[in-house]
Image (cartoon, rainbow, N blue to C red; front, side, top):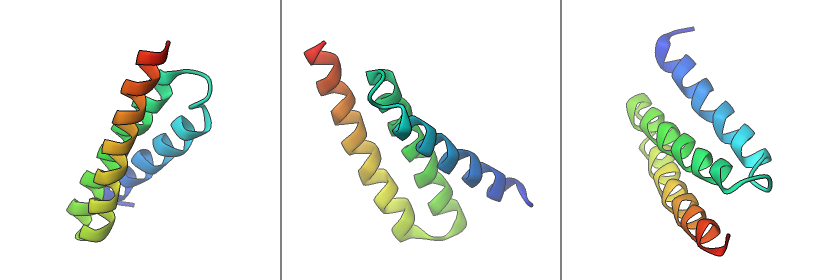
Length: 73
């Protein structure tokens, strides 16, 4: 397993864990957004630009959800 694959595994695992715990704290929503950015970077580095693009969009959506969640608390 090379470094790029390990990086992708870390990014996707972080996304999964943060998504699972989103209801507990808005900070997990922010963690999900950061993990999506990492997933996007992984997608572009791997050469799978559609995956990288979709993950970038998810990162923006999650960041907006974090801002809204922080405003309501």
